[in-house]
Length: 407
Image 1 (cartoon, rainbow, N blue to C red):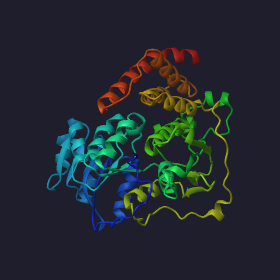
Image 2: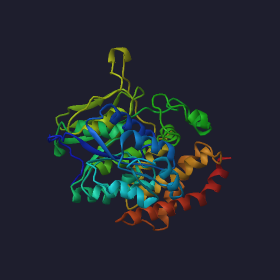
Image 3: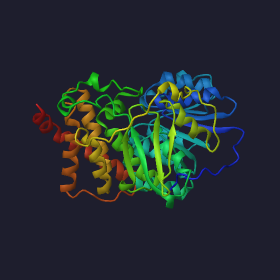
Image 4: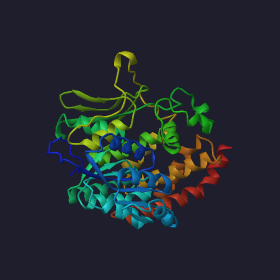
């Protein structure tokens, strides 16, 4: 059973919704706080968290009157208390404090803590049956099976905050599960969409960071350039909506106007369109089951003129193929895929490997993991975190030989 409500069954919205934002000072957090700022009478902030940005966190806590603020770095508790002196905001620091922020009684939680560190806080919100807007990929890529099982058991509502998954969420409301044929996730193609394979191999960091449509953080922008990000989204979609790999297609759409489509048995295809602005999917999650006024630019299709589509090239962008391989393998393989990719991207940013070696390191790590007989079902957050940790170590061990082959 999916914890994602595929039918938009209306429920009466409360006059004031209490919200918590985990990762309030990041890019997703910025967009979320912008939406909350636009509707001060509709939302009450319960808790806010940040990784290390005490100044930004304290500023937001003061502005929104947050009841609780937590910073992940335990050494910064004193600085946070000083910054919030004279307010009624309770303060915390460290992993346990971030989990406490998620466990506090907010109706709606934005789970935007990046990396494996976001898994336990998201589960804390899930376990109390909250509505959780999910912007952390690791919750599903690293722990999708038991994360969604826990959500269904607790009666939590998982609301996809990524633009592509939110598009599918909206389109899926047009039919029943048994009527579904496939979902289609769109991809911009990134900065290297038209590049030859040899040129992609030698791409520089500056070139990889020049995304044609979206303004995002460094890691996700590089993932978009390699199409690893689209592979991660395929894995997420499988767990979110209980789909098999064969029910998920990827279509390159350079304009980034259609974010996702769903094909039904009568051959109707329902698509969600919108300007490339993360505030649109977040606004949908924040208002659900209602819709709120969003600040994104109005979509002007006449001005855009045309929408084009291309098949993805698995040869030039092998990361997408590897994601499907990991999903079909299961039993922790998607966790390994994600961990190895993070090591590879960090190595590329650090100048240790070429851009083209990112996928080779991921593939080598996955192959070694399977050969070693390490595959086993993941049944807890600790299982997923352990596999993530061990896969990172394995990728780091393999890194020198991958770098040598590419030299």
